[in-house]
Amino acid sequence: MNHIRTELLRDPLFQLNIILWLTQPMPPQGSITPLLHQKGFSVYAIAPTLSVPPGIALAVQRSSLQTQQRVRPDVVLKRETDLKFALVECKASSFGVATEQAIQARTFLLLADEPLAEALGLSPEQIQASILAYALPARESARLEATLSRLSNELRRHHLPAGDSTMIGLDIDSWDVRVVFDWSGSQFFSIAPGSHPVMRVQPGDDPRPLYFIPYDPDVHQSPEENLFCKRILFERIHSAVLAAVGRASLQTNLTLNINNLLNDATFGMFGLWENRESLKHMQRMCRQLITALARAVNKEVSNSLIYEPPEDLKVVLSDTNQHHQVLAAIERFSCESMDLREPPMPDLFDDLFDA
Image (cartoon, rainbow, N blue to C red; front, side, top):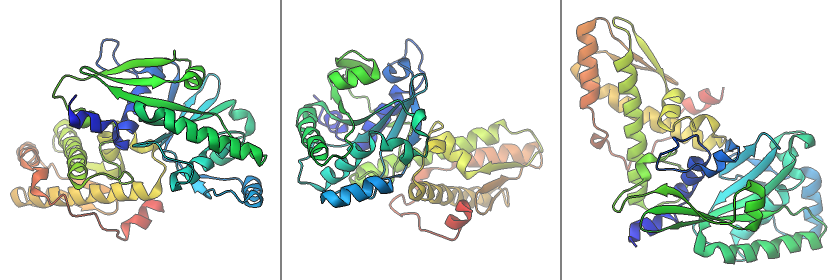
């Protein structure tokens, strides 16, 4: 088996995108089988911050168990028909009960029960069932299941909430990416237990350019992987600008919004992202790109791309000739001309976005 493809199973960004793929409507004969979408599940939120309710936090303090005040699952799924919620966390590998990750897991287990409604800002009747699901390589599932079982028993001994948990194991063979559901996951998601092919992958194919979220500042990656994923995001934003200018009416100025460009570049997922620091980071990256794009295009067609802080790019299309020139200049721009290793720096526009 190809080493790179095997390593993808350990990449939390790949794992997150697998979950997102599984929740999207897909063509019946496509290369992706959206198992979760077929069972009615959709994305409720990406990276929301969940705080432990004060009453539970006080009970935890009395127990002397270590938990976190707040956690941020990678994605929250919901099934509208029966108000089921799943907190999904992506991990490269299993972990033991004495690790920092176990403290986070203990907090997730606390919340994946009755406290989840309050943590999500919902009324109790708006959640009928919930579960904590870990997406990780299938070969790690049994070890992590044992760890979560010990953590759950520990919480119950101290008369604290302990939600159900399950593993969404990831595996890959010569042709398919597969997901493996255990019995508890089978019951919750209404999917038969065992291994299910969800993505056809030809030998030598790299699925990363198809990610819904090609880059996530919260994910720890090697420098090479980080640059690759950042380039994919930049190329998508560039393509979104190119497509918008190409569709623009003649002799009409066009205004492009940073958040809309990021939403286009992530196939709508940016609008579901709730981690404010990650959102700001992505917005800085988009500003970094459009600043470089405007500089390059304006060298060819003076004053045709104007960045209007904090979030708009104005494209001046005064006549047919300028439209064609601007479009050609945008096409010639390459993200390769940018130093992708340069991190986007915080600036005063971060606060303007919040306002």
